[in-house]
Image (cartoon, rainbow, N blue to C red):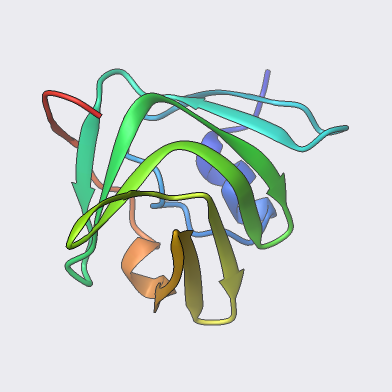
Length: 121
């Protein structure tokens, strides 16, 4: 029986709310750090700091302490939708790399939120 996704994120020093609330199924290879998170439908999540992330039905990346790198399946809007390639944690800040690096307050991602269904990723 694997631990809850939120517990895995805590263990790796990432906020529990970076994925939509209904993203509960995942595969994690501890040897390689490869994480694949399954989301029931393509959706967007709005956070307390007014940022928005868009999720595909499958998000993958490599998990290490304080960082999820080489991400496939997450976009954020910076005038246009840009692919998120890494998320790293440093104290009270979360750094999003999406073509360029964007830093946001970590506290905005500490609570899980529902995703709003969208037509396409």
